[in-house]
Image (cartoon, rainbow, N blue to C red):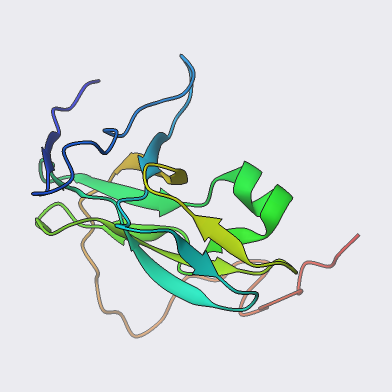
Amino acid sequence: MSFDVQIKRMAGNEDIELPRKMSELASGFDLYAAVTEDLVLEPGQRNLVPTGIAIAMPGGLEAQIRPRSGLAFKHGITCLNTPGTIDADYRGEIKVLLINLGQEPFAIKRNERIAQMVFQIVPEVNLLQVDELSETLRGAGGFGHTGTK
């Protein structure tokens, strides 16, 4: 199954790499920072980082913004609302909410890979209000109910 997703560079970002997969079987497209100057994230600091692009995708798709594992492991840089959701009707610039959970300041440079974008199919769902729900073995057991090992 294949979908066409349109992509537009925002004015002033002609030098920013377009999202791309870094290996043949990768599921995510890497996103690049469109900062005008180095952006330093101090430990515990968060910032909304522009990517310099906007997309148009067909209904029934969503784009999810996720952290890059290398940045998270090596520097403690991750996305705060992960996965971030881009809905099919959004046409604004994609921005990534990054936070520094590491011990050292981290400089984000122009055209640096900062996150990845994964496309997902969104099923048609109808919510039906009922007075009672069917019973299951788990029932209403919540966090940690099934045990940890």
